[in-house]
Length: 253
Image 1 (tube, rainbow, N blue to C red):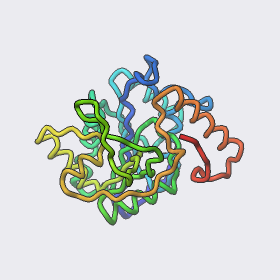
Image 2: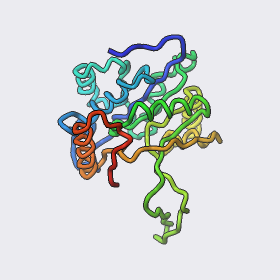
Image 3: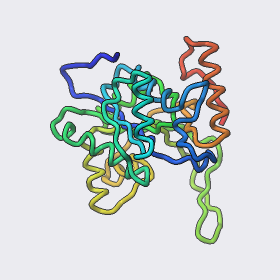
Image 4: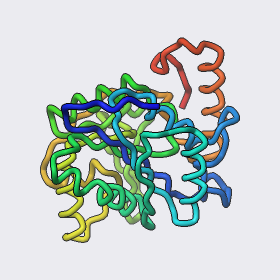
């Protein structure tokens, strides 16, 4: 069982698990696929459940997967998952569904920071979560990111390649935000019909800077069969050296 912190506004995570399995080439929601003998979603929720900085979790899923998600949460004993809601047809819509589930508590000042996390990134560490929350408390926002190792180009409508610059970073999740800020950003996006590629884009359009917190290579997003193989390597390394910090693992991209 988790221990609730008292005397200060809470930190909540919104876990997005409403995606399909198209790139994984499966009809099953990829969050239920197994890595190291356990569902990906179970590993992701466990990472958040064990992190002292996290007070509560909203799990966003599809209507069809709501019951299986409830069963998984009950079987795992994840008592920080206090709300399970149905998302929308896009990532942006699912983010909004998760925020709406927290809207009243955010407005009442009960929630200070909200993190938006991909359900298929199971290897987030408690240390990284704390760093993101600390930065969001001070700066209003924080995004984990890695310097792009390969050249990234932009292709125009004619198919021609243009250089996108050298100082490029690859954004990860969870992305952390002051709760009132991200709620207002999504409200304005809804009013303007704006759809962001990720939560950071929704906040950035308000003119609010989003600082980068160094990410970790092993914080992979499992979306393809190749990603599943990489995830198995990470799990094997962790089981071989259970006291090793996640941040010390090397995973080729």
